Length: 370
Image (tube, rainbow, N blue to C red):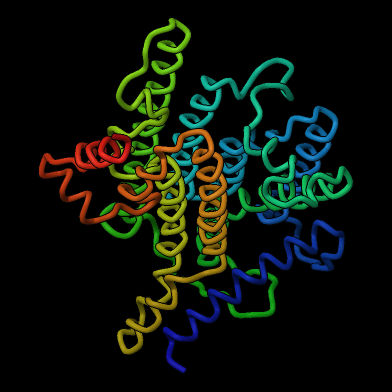
């Protein structure tokens, strides 16, 4: 076994062992005689458990099942600040704060935060699901409470912890190069790669900020559209164009049906790259296996966060569009023309050239009506 391969395996062992020891410290079975030190694994896990119980209890008592939504933009920020130990983890925390601050403001202006704090607008999809439109069994109050705990509170809160765990990887790798740890595998000393603004860290930073900007533009476009649409309706004006259709189709929404959700998923994929960057130093010492081991280091357990996030957004996106189709029949035409999270290449290029398929669609619709 070469030095590169050994270091790669030691890095993985080091990461997995920290998860186990973090869980053990929570349940009170950490028998290590080593001097007690700050452990961000157990600390963030305890915080996550607190948020799980908080959201479940408050949602059950208030019957407002958007309590997780209120904390969606807050908890990953808290977790990232709990992992600061060097330049990389500090930058990760600052980036998470930029994301969280913007998203929190957007949720606030849409009526998500009110006083008392457990009130505020509830995601309309929960009422839809609770009525049995998704699964009839959820109309049973006992089953719904189980669903509220298992999926709405537990699963989503664990997911929010998982998407922030690249900070834990970066923290672990930073400490692995400084001092030995009391674990049952070798520590990859002296192989930590510090923050590199012209390397993968820099790419991750730029991508993160780019997708935050994209999400901000998309949210602003949607907010402006809905504000104007309801202004016209409340004023008794006749709705025309996209306002008559009922849903936004311009700006980024001409390229993607849900550009804000696409950006949200991409943000956390970019965040994952910081963890990858922190492990890259483990293969810099041996050129013989550098290619294979660098490929291996592109994967670590924190990828589960963005994978589950993408899966959640795929399912929730489909549910949202089922509801939208019932409200706006013309949405079906929009679905054929524009991709949900990935652009349809042909129509996208056509639109970039200054053309639009809307006129042809409208003409065909008119012919069918005459």
